Amino acid sequence: MYYNWAVNIKNMIHLLDNSAQQVDWIVMEREDCSPCNIGATLLSPIHLNNKNYNKNPIIHSTIRTWKQIKQNLKLRNLSLLIPIVNNPLFKPSIIDKSFIQWERMGIKMLGDLYELGKLLSFQQLQLKYNLKNNQYFKYLQIRDYLKKYTKDYHNMPTDLLDEAMKTKAESANLISYLYNIILNIEIPTTDGIRRDWEQELAINISKESWDNHLLQVHKCSINVRHTLIQFKTLHRLYYSKTKINKLFPNVSPICDKCLCQEATIAHSFVFCTKIQKFWNEIFDIFTKLIKIKLVPKPEWIIFGISEGNPELNVFQKNLLNYGLIMGKKAHT
Ligand SMILES: [Zn+2]
Image (cartoon, rainbow, N blue to C red):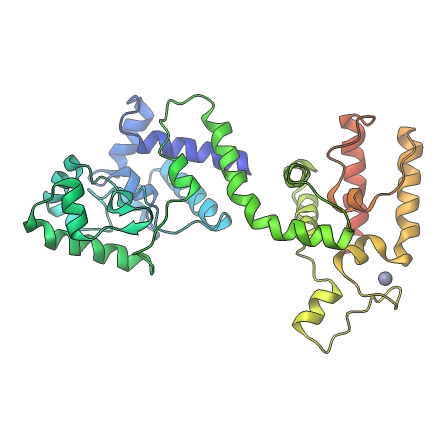
């Protein structure tokens, strides 16, 4: 999924970068957005009618994936990279030539109206870009546009992806770079989840291991339902009895199987005395299959085996991970 996102963002960078080589496909996509700027169309904070891009299926799919990226990475809806001139949601920029003058003076995109995440006042913009006094009304118009599409328009700090998307389209290894940026945005949001697992499993999980576990989710199976089981486990999305108890205090947090301990996620999947026999048997089967003695480890059951076992080859790891997902499926 992250790889597809990185490819989509790379294509967007090609379309946004005016200095990029004007190859046929870029010219065609831009023409389909004419008279509006393709950047303003792609990055629009709200859904635009497909007539705005001549029903071009590539642009349609790029916009759809961008929406998915924004939602999943919890990005701000209004990108600082949105061009000001010929913006379909900012009519004055289409009918009033003053904004072309602004563009020539250096105010090309929304981010140019900000410094260190703060919206510049008209006086500050005048100083920075040499704007004349008669441009004040234009400033109010653009401020109204910002206000319309974001509540906290005064404070819009740049985010990692805003910065990454300023990269030149011709840069080498752009997809890998974007892929890592996406991971970097995603990982801080899962830091709390990593700590919760450290506490429940009573182990230290290094950032490196955690990154591996996150990557492993997308590689563990070609079956989407299996991937989802691993995703929900890793992200602690299952409703354990302790979790339900926090929402509804009249529901007991005690495990239904052993009737003696609180059913945290780790207890329900691994530690419950009533399911330990199950895991021992699973690992015995693995041991017979691959002829390497394996002792059940709680972290393997939860995260899968993505590292730290040089004696296992890729085929054996894949087999084990598949079996562990099936095992977890039996306890969901
Ligand atoms: Zn139990």
